Image (cartoon, rainbow, N blue to C red; front, top):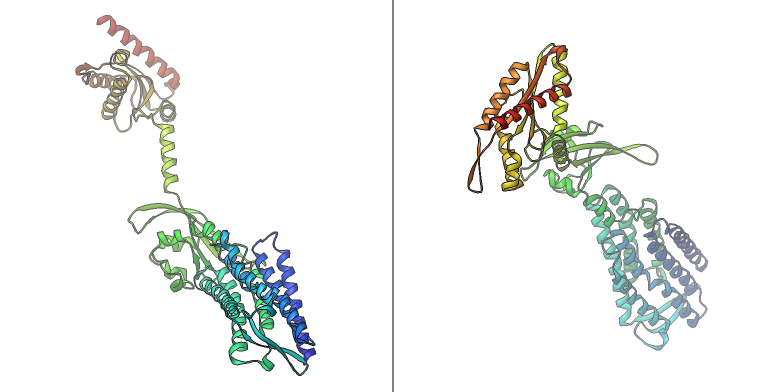
Length: 509
């Protein structure tokens, strides 16, 4: 019997040592596995010490191996606490983590000097049963503190593992199944040992802990429970501004982040809707349902629960496992509202004069060239005009540049209101304005220009309590079809006419 039991415990010790070395080998790439590795090492010391205990020839040797056992057993709860918070991620940077080792250190010191007090074991003795040495002792007060601490560590781990199983991502749920099973095994074994009874009163905890370590290894190492701790998941997934919805290979809802829940009220309860076909959950959002069937990024508008309309771009990505097998898809909804507004604003700034709201010179020239080419191609008339405000320098010098800006804005409004729908005007520079008149030859362009001059000359502006009369000089040029000059030549001709009129006006004045 002793040989059989020692063989089982020996295999248990080897399993723990192997898993500990495997965990330590992963710490450089994955620091979270360090706590798991230390847990396995503590379990190995516990199991190895128990081999010595059951094979001890006398009480003194048995107590010596008991001390060795507790070099591992005393620190198992602390390792479990550290391992669990590494998995959860919310407290893994807390400096209070060292406090988890305080009860373990006290336990080990009490066991180390077990023959000098009755705080842990009371009157220990040894009995021999079928070649096995069994420790018989009453329990001191700190023994129950250590036992409660051990139970608390496993219960705490089970609580977080069950929470990850019920509310976490698909990957976390797969990991948590192994972790929950592993966490239950030592609790059941310890309960049987203390309250039900085991053959010869043997402690089966070292064997159950081997099963725990194996299941934990599947969760922590094979399925990468520490690859992305929930804190990192919160930063990378739940706290992303982009909304993310994940479905499996059968288009059933697998996961979604906080942003998706905010913009899609149907994603209200993960427990209730995970595993439900995405089409059923998104039935009230046909744009989203359609996005799952289109691999191309596309934009659409979505009305949010607060009533605001936002522009989103849907991007669909395929999920594959290590064997390139299809496992699902990820729909990412990128809020493009601010970006679209910024792009529109930048486009406007590139085309519009900020002060007057008219076309700026560059955009005016682009549109005018397009119209001129159309007139030449289809043998249609086209005319232009240049207008310059009279006395504008006097307004700036007398009442300041703010008054000059006000005069420019007034003239801009008057000109825009006086043009046909097909005409357009731009600020050419300073107090100069350029006009384009599609379907107008030189004569019609001149008539339109005279109308503009009359409108401006009829305008007044109150500056510093004084009524100021505005006026403008305007020159025109034009042609028909192939006879139309180049745009620069037409504007130069209009500019020359404008200055002749301005000079004549000064003489007349």
